[in-house]
Structure formats: C-alpha cells, structure tokens
Image (cartoon, rainbow, N blue to C red; front, side, top):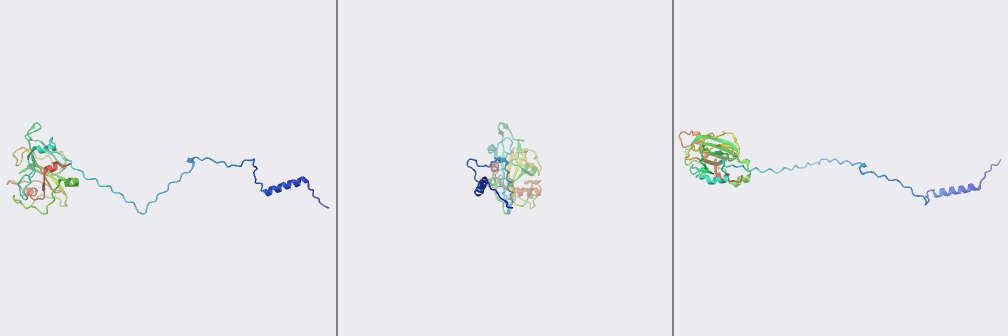
Length: 294
C-alpha cells in the first residue's frame, strides 16, 4: 500500500515565510514601533548609605606635647608704710635721708626716716598707723631694744617677683666673705640662722614703733596691712618711722638684737652685728623699693 502525502499550495507559502524569519533572526523592530525604554527611579540623596569615616590609627611615633610658655612672675604690690600718705608724697616728709655707712662701720644712716609735724591738716604723728610695704612673713620682733626700740622685720622672698623688676633695682650681689667690724665689739657667736641654698629675700625693718608690733615671728602679713604705729622708742628724739631695707639669704629670723647698752645680751649684740655690719644682709636704698614700678 502506498502512503501519499498531500501538499497544499498555501502551506508552501507559510513555510517560506517561516524560513525567511529564521534567516533574518526575527529581531528587526518595525520603524513604526517605539523602542522599549527602561524606567529610571530617582533615589533621594538621603537614601544613599553613608560611608563610615575611616578609623585613625595612632602613629608609631607619638606627637610631642607643646609646653606652654611659663607665666612671668608678678610684680610686687607695694604700699606706702604710712596710712593715708601716698607713696609719691613720702619724699616730702623725709626727716632723715638714707646715708649708707662705710664698710665695717656703723655710722651713716641705714634707712630713711619719715616724720612730720603737720600733714594734710593733721598735727602730730604719734600713733600714726604703720603699714607693711610688701607682703611677707614676720622674721623679727624687737621689744624696745636699743637702738631700734619697738621694731618689726618682714621678709619677702625675691623668688616671687620677676627678674626684670629685680634687675631694675640693681640689688647688690652676695659678698664672698663677712666684713669684719671696724667700730663695734661683736661676739663671735650669732643666733641668726638662714638657708644656705642661694635663695635671697628682701627684709624691711620698721623701727621706733609706739607700742610692741601687732604680729609675731612666723606670721604672714599682706601688703598694706597694719603692723604697728609710729612712735619714738629706742634711740629717737622725735616721733617718726625708721624704714630700713636689706637683701640677704632667705629664711633668717631675728628673735632679738641690740647694742650700745650693757643691758643687751651677747646674742643680741651678735645678731645686731650680723644685721648691720657683716655684709650678709646688704643695704638697699628704701626709696628705690617704694618708688619701683610695682
């Protein structure tokens, strides 16, 4: 039996079209059709993830720390030693000026005396309040000992003040050796002790006070604080304030000192010689201190 296959003419046409499509890849888009587009989404800026800041790793060599410049030492606060008498008027009431002695001698005038009969309408100086010119520590108290009478000595270390202020004062340098006395009988022993580390201080002596000083050795005193009253005790013929300044080793104390009378002790005379003649405590012009740029 013979099997026959029938081929219709229209089937040949379809096969031809399919063959053409396969050959052309069927990828050509007719010109009349728009090209397909991919929609783009707008992402807000805040939606984007923020990158983490990188972690700083310490360097192998540490960075040196900057050391601030040291603060200059302050200038001293200086007050007039007499209440209600301004510093710039002290020169007008000097009754006995500063007159430094010859080396080894106890002559001249070791300080400056402030005295008046009438000042700004006030008559008499007896009991006039005496003030500390500088802050410091009480280093000595004399109870009516000759020649100073009632006296207080206040120490102010120089380490607390600027080098420029000290240089402007032109303070004397320490002496290499003690000056022998040429005019006084001075015992060998001395009760004055002080530090030997090279530190130096100003010592201000306020003498001839009317009554014993208001402070004791070791007390702290502020500049401008009342420490006594003007008088005429000791070797004095009228009411005045004897104001004496020396520079010497820090830490000294003067429990008492005196001379020129048989009633003084050997220790008092030794202390007096150490203070006045030895050169350990060197004189400074008091007006240089009071009129300095403090």
